[in-house]
Length: 123
Image (tube, rainbow, N blue to C red):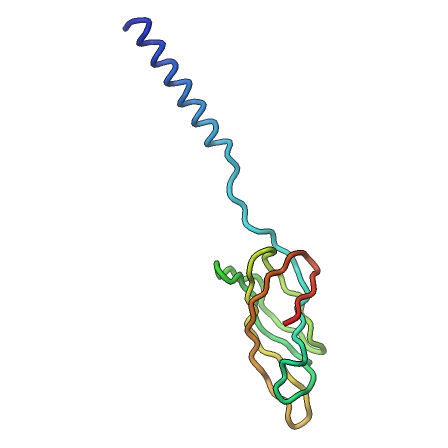
């Protein structure tokens, strides 16, 4: 093998090595960070009036369907679910509208996009 052929092979190997190094050094794609937010279901959701006193449901990311939280709370109209920040999340649940004999459970289904942890989201 001649000197020129060895140089070409050496140059090609150096180029391939540099290319492989840049591919390996590339940073992986990162998901949006997780956080926790206050979700408040407003009393205006009660069709016959009343006060929301219980919430139950689940939160997931709207487009990837990653379940972030499920559960419930009684005594007020606030929950503190885990969410994925800076992407669309979906709350799918029920809230109890307390109003004497007109009390009822209502369905609540809303998309929201939280920006930061401890943000208050009104639905």
